[in-house]
Length: 277
Length: 98
Image 1: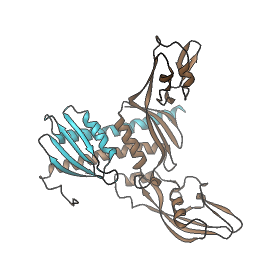
Image 2: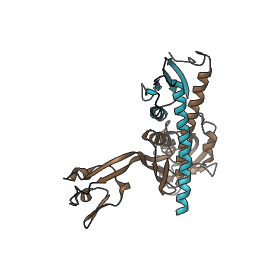
Image 3: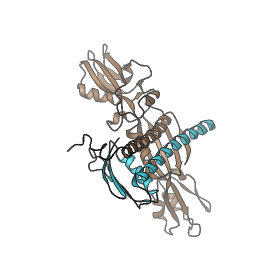
């Protein structure tokens, strides 16, 4: 297994994983989307809401505000199915005293400075003079499989590493493949066809279609993957990827220990517990 | 995760993995394929929302299906740890470059 980082920023990472298989890549992708925990608003007590939005609409908007979380929380709940041990209160108390205003995520006051909205500029509701919103919001840890508001990634995908094969004997350098390629992967320079940007090839195979001499062939390498992980800002992309690997490891170990306890127990003793009819 | 053994034949086993889905079942199935002794490995999830995965493994007899499952799960755990370490190493290399 070999990994090479292509791009890394506060919000995204792009890397190549070599020497693996699609099932492993897919397990990681699924875990990043639906099993890496984050914090999101889950319960709200409305004390006053004279805005034009109904309580439930405003509640839904508040819940979708990504909250930056402390990565040490991940260790606190690693391997546990019950995430209710962590809760935090946020307060929103805004009144439009002079003229219209837009209530933004920045108006949310958090009890814990480590947990706060990722951006202060997410609009929640617009108020006109005299309107008021006062509420208490409770954020808790959750997982994306329960609700997408707990998903730490806004985009998480992988594609096979492209293999572009040009048969020099058949190629007549017509340049059609380079001309039609939607991502400018190929380039015809003088009497040479070069692959300038193989990683941005999407395996659309349009070049194969336009090549009259069938000189170009594109396929995906199913042992190598280009991953793209984009964080909502709740966690750093590095934490998301490494935590996904931790979760997969724990899953396998949990399976192993449960299976072993089944094998050591006398027959018929462990199963059939609270089995629904 | 909760495991329930549904059937144990001579060289095959059928179990239910409550609380799991495609995420773990598919990688387990794929990892079992790497084992020469495994003749068949597969699973079904009856309902996309409320289904409990049913996993089925059959071996050729040179190894019990439980042994095959244990070997596969160990491999998955090993690879996940390897992936995490390799990823963190790659991040360090990348940060050193820029």
